[in-house]
Every structure is written in structure tokens, then in C-alpha cells.
Length: 110
Ligand SMILES: Nc1ncnc2c1ncn2[C@@H]1O[C@H](COP(=O)(O)OP(=O)(O)OP(=O)(O)O)[C@@H](O)[C@H]1O
Ligand SMILES: [Mg+2]
Image (tube, rainbow, N blue to C red; front, side, top):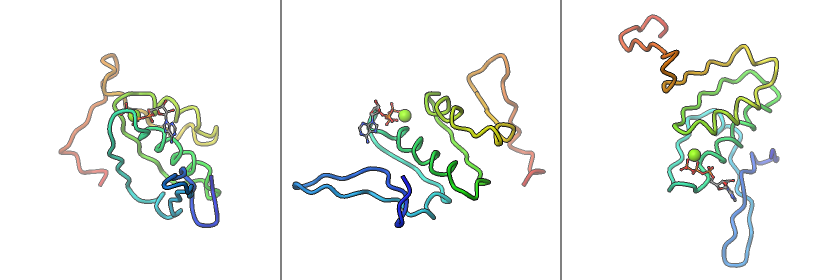
């Protein structure tokens, strides 16, 4: 949820007080790494962050997501606005029928 001070990504309750947890809007344009135990909400956090990026009014930011379980990518594909569908590149390295080729020595694209 957007607020004047950034994106609200949750709330923190401690010692009887509940405070909003905000992520400054400019943080959405930096690389983020979430480290936590299994099932602690990493994918949910990144889904909310991706929703925030996709809903930005300027609307033309890129988003790169890599995840091992599929659920996050499948949830994200549901959120792609129709106007951006042709911009989506989905690489499924587990799909043996259509394995993507990656040439680490090819520097022609920078
Ligand atoms: N802030 C939250 N408050 C309450 N429940 C949450 C919150 N974030 C995530 N959950 C719930 O916790 C469960 C695990 O969330 P999620 O799949 O995002 O975790 P994860 O860290 O990505 O797990 P994994 O390590 O298996 O990838 C889900 O059922 C999700 O709905
Ligand atoms: Mg996950």
C-alpha cells in the first residue's frame, strides 16, 4: 500500500505497540535480497513489492524475479497488465521440452 513515506509492507507489533513497516519508494529501484527460514514470508513480501512496482504510475520499470518454487512466478504472471504482456520473458530451466540456451561467453548484449 502506498503512503506518503513509502510502501507499507506490513506492521510490527512489539511490547504492546503496533507500528507500520515502510519501504521507501526509491528502494523499489534497487536489488533486494530476502533471507529467512522456510515459510517465513519471503515470496509473499516479493509479491507485494512486485505489485507496488507494477502499480507505479510511470509504469515502465523493469522487474527481474528468480525463484525456485514456481508459485511466486505464477502469481506474478497473473498481475501483468495486458499492455505489458508482450514484455514478459519467462525462462523455466526445469522445462526439458524447451530448455533455454544461455551462453555465458556472449557479451554482445552488454
Ligand atoms: N506477513 C504475513 N503475515 C501472515 N502470514 C503471512 C505473511 N507473509 C506470508 N504469510 C503466509 O505464510 C506462508 C508462507 O509464506 P511464503 O510462501 O511467502 O514464505 P516463503 O518464505 O517464501 O517460503 P519458502 O521458504 O518455502 O519459499 C503463506 O501461507 C503466506 O500466506
Ligand atoms: Mg518462497
